[in-house]
Length: 126
Image (cartoon, rainbow, N blue to C red):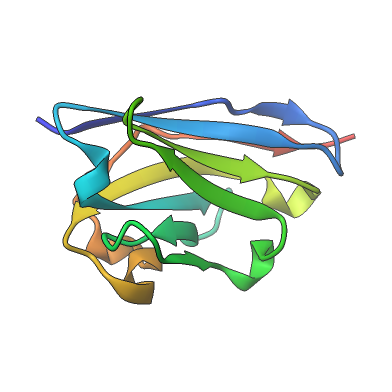
């Protein structure tokens, strides 16, 4: 069974940085599109950034453009979300998701994914 585990969340001050990790087991991440999503209290889960099954193309939500990047370490079977210049509105539970054969900007849509991690809390506060 596909398993994804997020880690790296925590409390950070505005303007700070965090790096989240999404580790996969029982499948090879390199064959999948990987998306990072977040859900704040009372809001819908939204796509933040993703890398498609092309392994090259990435797509970024306007709200985090220029601040968040996604990368993968195939040897470690792990995908990272680097978050810089964090703002209080970035506070949310962050989830990674995986899906095979998902291309283009569709990788930013939560409805396209079958496999999800359990989430990790990110809180941006003074």
